[in-house]
Length: 133
Length: 129
Image (tube, rainbow over all chains, first blue to last red; front, side):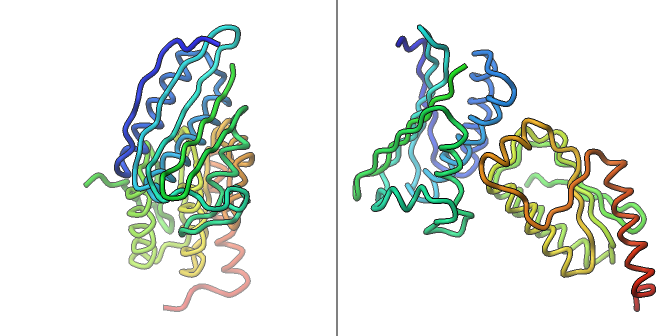
């Protein structure tokens, strides 16, 4: 698998969620993802960027375009917040420790082709999502 | 600060969301609309989201909240113009917008609002003031 391009977008405060959405839209359109696939990964990115702010105290997202053999878009969200003690519970629909709907993690997982989450209590959380063309 | 305009047309309030809303703007719209309903005695609210490229759980919750608050204030809410890709994504995300009435476009939405206001009038007589 070849990484064609990589860039990092900071997620510090709430307006950055809009910046992340905008950048993911541009890159996924350039890659030629279908409109539905673009919408899915932008929505997932919006959820995860907001989570990084609310639960992770901010972080960043790495935007990578992939090629060879498959074309795709990979986003890696990283924060250095408190981490998630129980991943299984956090992925369950309706579960939230905040005030949201509890759809962010589980919902994002359903919107992408690959979803990987690594979280260590006290160190932070890294979530990688990929949508293939 | 940026604001989303609320237009009054007869008994109804109209909102067209044309910007990529950040969360604070969505919260402000929720507050502004609730205040506008009570100030103008509006009977219905029409929210056009045809230019919205995504509806995530935050915006979805805002739409549900607006519908619930306007119902408490005796007004109906209709959300119109959702793009098909947005609808597909929303359902897969797990949001079904409980309590939010939808219509395909502004015309159909206005029709729905008028019909429900008329039905209410017939059932309960005109509003007391």
